[in-house]
Image (tube, rainbow, N blue to C red; front, top):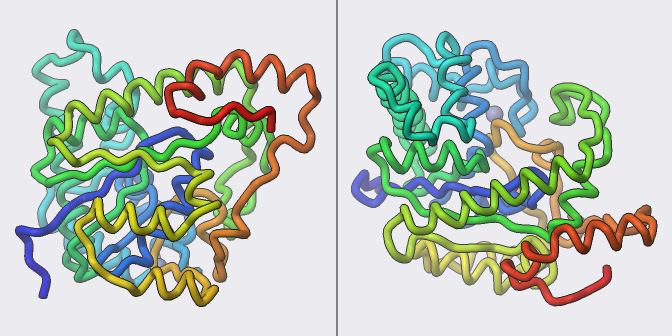
Length: 312
Ligand SMILES: [Zn+2]
């Protein structure tokens, strides 16, 4: 039975390409957990979304998300799409600057949290689950929710070798809406990714001190891939879930299922997923010179996240 008092929002924070999509999918395979994907994108474009849900339907045609939208709209005035440009500001780090907290800004921030809460409530209701995963990743959204939302949060900080993140974002991707790529994505220069990685990592770690004790967990993507069972045990302990369902599935080599993952990277559009198949040999096209410069630039982050020294 769904008990509202036990409801929790699990927020995955971290950088793009940090492994948050597979983490979200893995969490969604734990009993009692609904993994929604990147809810910030959904909330701000719910009525006009051109994205596909992982069930294969357009989000605007998917029964699950149509029900969520109908219920959320009963709790809020109008829909968030109308205020998309204004509300998206609360995912920009500038929204955390104190001088920006004018009366008008506070009102919009309240609205951002109210919309988020309305969608969270609707998803709890439609899914029938007590734990909801929001894989939006943005630490700024997390801070603004922690400051204004009425829900209880648990934070999972998804980290990956910073060099792998840089190489992954440096690759360009062609638009393929059905595969979950909404537009052509040009490769991002290393220096820009490095700068963002430092900022995102700093804000994500600071969120730990904003959340109640015991509500922050850091998961390294490489650990999730190489020792999925231990990571699942760690996640279940963190969430207070005692279930053997996912452990048994993994032990038997079964495929992870997806229900209605609304936004995220292209992995969510695959129907049969095994964690072991999601590893990425990111270093194979990297020259020694680039590898050396990259290693120097991200060494402080690697040390902070306790990555063992490894050339590749
Ligand atoms: Zn769906």
